Length: 102
Image 1 (cartoon, one colour):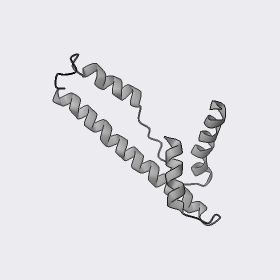
Image 2 (cartoon, helix red, strand yellow):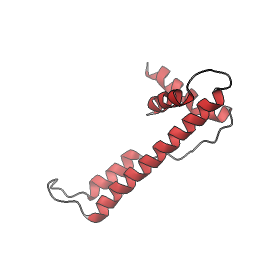
Image 3 (cartoon, rainbow, N blue to C red):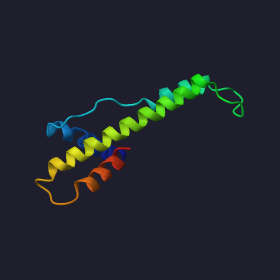
Image 4 (cartoon, rainbow, N blue to C red):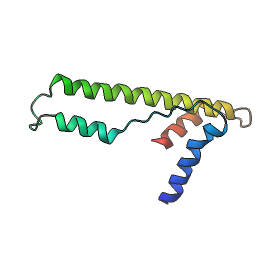
């Protein structure tokens, strides 16, 4: 099952290239970023985090929102490109595609 899911994800990731749509290549390395935040967070979790650590959290959230918005825009472009061949709501299909990507 995992192999099939991974294969489908790879196909979906390559369709924009095939259709010559602009593709954002930037991905967030969540594990590394959270590790960096966790390493700098106070040992006592009840203690307030320093401002520089809170700034790291805020930056991560901001970049997550930017990447998510880019992903939604790419999905809409992809499904609008397919709109010529397939009838239906491109925005709804784009939302489904985004859900499958996450």
